[in-house]
Length: 376
Image (cartoon, rainbow, N blue to C red; front, side, top):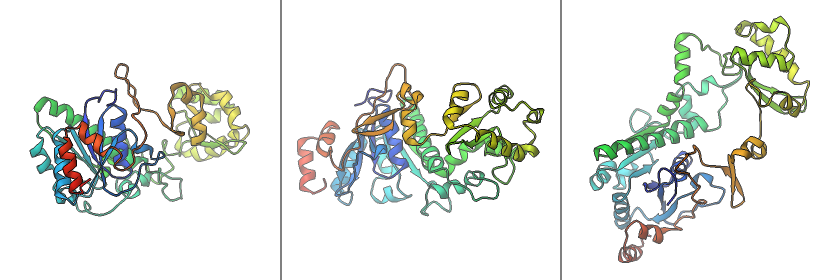
């Protein structure tokens, strides 16, 4: 059991990919005791599977009624159930919300899908790129005259999916502790990614956000909010929005001419971009870091993952740690009293079947019965 603020909270996680494991990783990092239900005979558990760290694996054959009953017994003792299948899959397994909440009325039943549990697209396949396409987010990211650029799968899977599911389940858990009643949390990546776009919906309604992409202040259209190549072919980032920060940028970059006074004149941004691009190419990235890093310019070098591991700020905060030779993100956020700790690497499938079942209340006879039924 972990030592963080969720210490003592029990979670049954049904194995999935991407955002599901990442959500459970966050709960584990904060101290939750998580049993992941894996498919008997399945594979997995590489030390490189960072999102699966910090829980125990129980391998079950969910086609057998004995395995379904074993799941329900685990669920009776759980605070949270987390699943990421298409709508209807859990119901067909005999593990839908009605069945589980009947066995455990205080259960928080968390469900994450791309399109949500309802709606005309609910049963269609999809990936992050499709979900954020529907929200306006993908359309907004790119250079003028060029196609939209996928922001990895951070906005749909992890931001709009995993983080909203975690927040929703923990909110429902707080309410269940007051009311004694659980509920279903329907976390759709389209909903979450749209929620992340709240500010930009406001900008659009007010006329502040314009098409095409790459012409606005926060999408690289402004000369004071963008990335720039340096003399050595590396990159830096500038975010000098506020006038006082822009003034420091001008001072440090030698932009003393009155031409640069018109910071918010959108009509001049394209030309200003070209001029400032030339300025930043006169020095190497390290030279610009020595001039600008740590000032109020709102500056940072654009680092690769390997470079980020070694950056002094990240090292000072231990933002990145090494487990079993694999560099990976440390826990986030941090707590002053209930310190969180990574509970261990990703388990192999079925690694903890007997020990985890025993810890969650299964008797030796129960476990032997599951073995005889070839359920585990």
